[in-house]
Amino acid sequence: WDYTRVIPYPTAIADLVEKKAVFGDVDSSGATDTTDLALLKLFLVGAIEDTDIYPDIDKSGIADTTDLAILKLFLVGAG
Image (cartoon, rainbow, N blue to C red; front, side, top):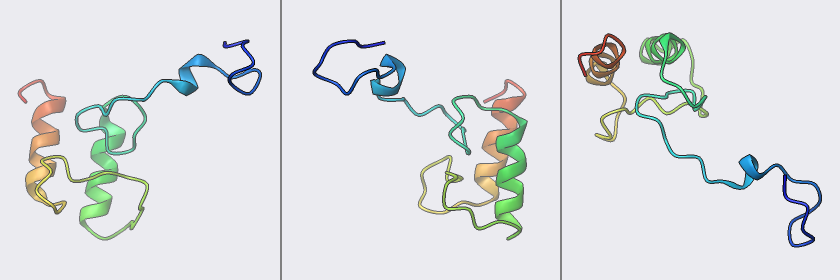
């Protein structure tokens, strides 16, 4: 907690630290897990159009099956 008067009182220090992107973290939860895999699959089949997810894992400009393959490999420890 920051108890100075510089920042609105009280503010959790963790809320002030810039969060680094986690590889493959489609839902920005801070961890790459099977939830990310499920969201990416749903996104790719058109079941969701959620703008709060980040499905372009390889940063190619589009979310596609390559991103799905990369995420699967990462989750099994091969990526």
